[in-house]
Length: 379
Ligand SMILES: Cc1cc2nc3c(=O)[nH]c(=O)nc-3n(C[C@H](O)[C@H](O)[C@H](O)COP(=O)(O)OP(=O)(O)OC[C@H]3O[C@@H](n4cnc5c(N)ncnc54)[C@H](O)[C@@H]3O)c2cc1C
Image: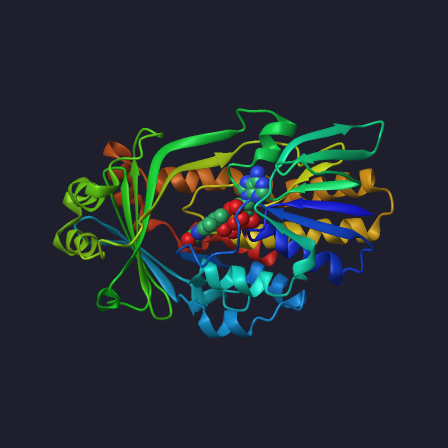
């Protein structure tokens, strides 16, 4: 079986390892648009489901266990620093609390296991012919080369070319919110847990990592406006003025040379995971609210389930059907809950007032239920 994987982020390389683990007899090629794997990115969350799946695939978790920081709790506060709710992750330790780790380190742990001979850097597909009757997908690449595959896997992230090209446009939707992420000086790591401060349709999230501290800022905003990079810190300081001196000071203390990560938050809204011989995994199919922190864990799950189904079912069409069924069954409810959680966190005006009144009264068992269910269920 000839398999082409498009994208060398978290989902694509995980799939290579999973195919090997499940003894799928195949020739795999992985194409990645970047000229090399670079040490970029900020912190990323890995939940128990992702950690367990990596462990079972034999991906050395030594680095992940050693370098990841297991966040014990998260406090949710108002801009006046009144704690509305504390979520204690240690409560479901047996299911796997979240660890935070630099994305570059997680990525390196996964790609270091790959045979370099299967990876083609600095290349992307420019056309895919994917007809049902042929049972193959014919692909043309940016360097002029061509190939025919029994399966093409789009693991090319939230801005997936594969999704746009094969499934059509308009599946990526914007939250009308922007996200900025930056490392801040370790002296600001005042607590062991994460602190989320919310108000006025904005959020500041302080996140401790093992030997770093990250500040994420999230605000309602028209998508498509990059803003001036030169004045970014000052603009953010003004935008988050009501969050108080401490947050303003943290923003201004970011070294000038640091690239603050900027993104218009988006999610993918689509039912199907495959079309003929092209299948999507990871953010390409189900990017969700950045507030969920589940992207890497679900991408790792996708790769495991796809490899399992290909290993169990000789007929590729049947394997894809079963894969889609399993993933929709697990993720559909969670996707809906992601929107609800996003709306609660980013509430403004009257809704924010209601959140202040009702959030403290809400039993933790109810607010943690979606997560608990996802972590407890078989993938
Ligand atoms: C450089 C980078 C840094 C990131 N940093 C963070 C972070 O700090 N914190 C966080 O929470 N999340 C980060 N993410 C997103 C996070 O990795 C994903 O949300 C999640 O892990 C799901 O992984 P994925 O493999 O589906 O997508 P991604 O990790 O986004 O991987 C997609 C891969 O596909 C490649 N690609 C895209 N288009 C093409 C194409 N046409 N042809 C070939 N290759 C293509 C991209 O270069 C990338 O390597 C980052 C993603 C990238 C690409």
